[in-house]
Image 1 (cartoon, rainbow, N blue to C red):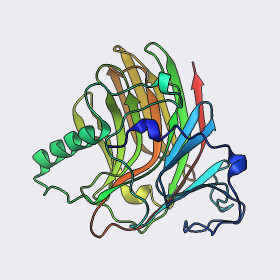
Image 2: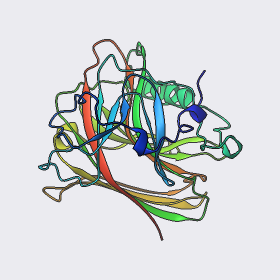
Image 3: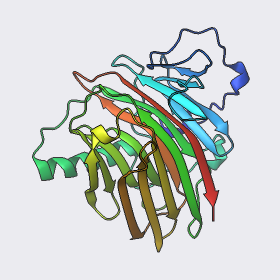
Image 4: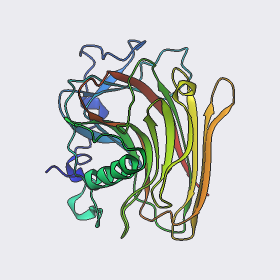
Length: 287
């Protein structure tokens, strides 16, 4: 089993990435881009000392259409034949002596647990998973209890992809303490954007029509105070209209040694569609 230490160990400088590569299949991609990953192998690296990435699909920096208002932009693209990601993983830094594991459960087990909850409540048939794909960014290093951070980023997902009961994670608040795993997750499922809270055992705390997220720049803001007596406040806003699409707040255990992870992570199953998205304009500010 491949573990998460292989994902972020290869911190590739952008200077080694060439421009003489075929254009990725992301719609409306302009010519000014640099490849981070081509989707033919599992690759990881760092944008900076505080933001890392991992990809089994095509991922570039730059090249977003000027009509899509994301300044620092990372187009990403999956097809049903892209390289499949490892499943059971733990978080680690670039250095072997800085590894932080998920002591009680790896990510594969946590996903299986979340799925079991959904199936139990809805009577859905268990999925036939062929593998997984992910293109994700991760804040680093892990944040200790007692600190408060506000994370902001933008996303844009192109319409025309399929959703069903299978998960499609677009962001997660993660913890690497004694409990380990996700605290909050925003999924796209069965035509909905679904926010779940694992700690408070809420599978679908808030939902919104997926159509309100497709083909639009969405501004995400998540303010977190980490620790056993912490808090989280999240909202997703349509950039063009200013309308709040989803909002959620909670207090209590938010974990420690935490990070925000955003992008795309999904299982591959028969009939899965291609998927194209953009993220960018990320910031993390401590208060």
